[in-house]
Amino acid sequence: MSRCSYQSPDHSSSKSPHFNMAAVDVIVNKFAALWRIRYIRLTLPLIFLGISIVGSVVKHTQIVPETYFSNRRNVVNMYFVKVSWGWTLLLLTPFILFTSYKRLTFALRRLSSLVVATAIWYTFTEAFSYIEGTTGTCHVPEPEAMDQVPHHDEITSKWSCRKAGGQWDGYAISGHSFILSYSALIIAEEMAPMPKKQSELA
Image (tube, rainbow, N blue to C red; front, side):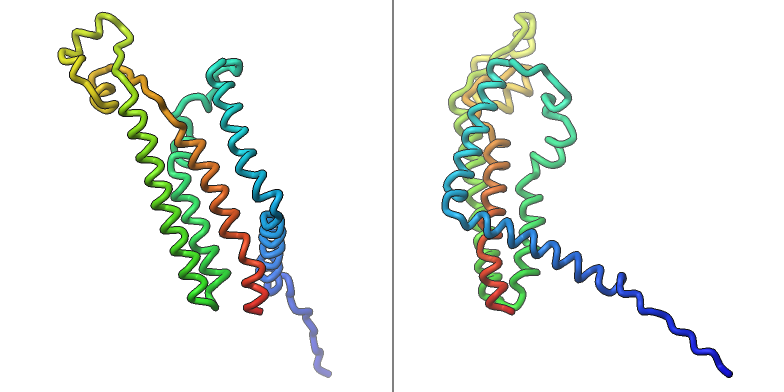
């Protein structure tokens, strides 16, 4: 008499990817629904503005002691903040493609908005650099260092000042604060229309 062995199917491997994607979809829809509330849309930019103002005051008064993150060469600043717009595009591009692949026109419209957002980011970045360059002057901390700058009065750019060993003192607008706030707002804006479009595709 032959024995028939019955093995229950392993549902964990087949359902796990679907479950993970469903969980991500729920989280995205929750955040998108939250962002579509008018009060939230008006308040979030003001929150970022308030954080920037408070941070500037704290930095100017130096009431917080220096830490590892005060050094501009820390890991977070070098590999995340400085290239945060690249990380934003790296996350948003596949997100738009995966959630809009059935509607080519909608996907292209969302991707074109990223191109416009990139142009705006570049324009503001260059504007900040131009303002700092036109409002600044070159200072040499040590008097004896003046010998290393034979044409000190002729130095008119931040790059040449630093190359000569000086310090450029100009009106510096924080590009880091701008790009972090800007990236967060762009991500929220790109998430907002997704639940509506997903319901249309279903």
